[in-house]
Image (cartoon, rainbow, N blue to C red):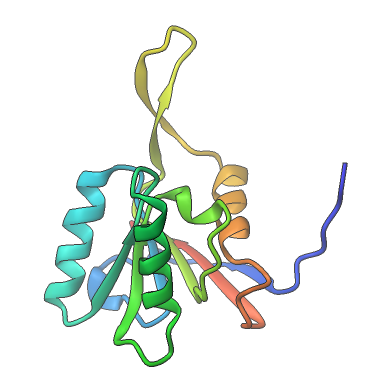
Length: 146
């Protein structure tokens, strides 16, 4: 077992975001299905933000291009909408993780898909893996949408 020390503080917000009108530069909204990803990204774009999108079944080159667009300080793209795939080896300069939902599809013992609420520890693990040492901020924030 290897133990690692967090290089940045992970702060869980006391209040939910409540509205996509409160999305800011550096935010990443985590969704657990593609329908939510596309509806949330469209709604954020309608509010004047350019959005990068990453989910598991995107080709690796597309994921990398979206990550580079989000990370580029010269790019106007400053908001990410993604699944928890962002916590799997993609370096992103995210300031705040916002869980759009805490309900995630899972495969049960019989191989059937069902919906399950993620635990607090799962949410913190996703946020912690996403808010890596690549992120140069001293504090990162985690909150729920509703």
